Length: 79
Image 1: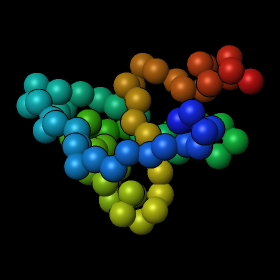
Image 2: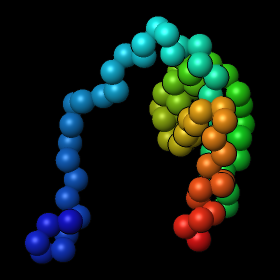
Image 3: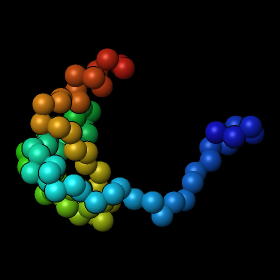
Image 4: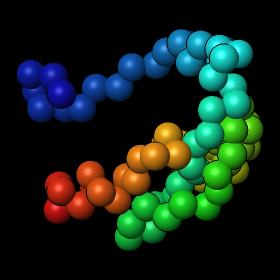
């Protein structure tokens, strides 16, 4: 937010770096949000990133979390 109270956005050509080979097969959980975080798939990080890109192209939002993290546990603490 700037001094006038308007929200400022920044356009950037930066993107996430390429996935390091040693993490490509790490297990993650793909979630979407509908009143709460809903797990939809367990897969490798490499496949999950591809799925995220495909979902983004269709205007959908999914998020990736490590397999041992449940976002419902920490998002409920903010309600």
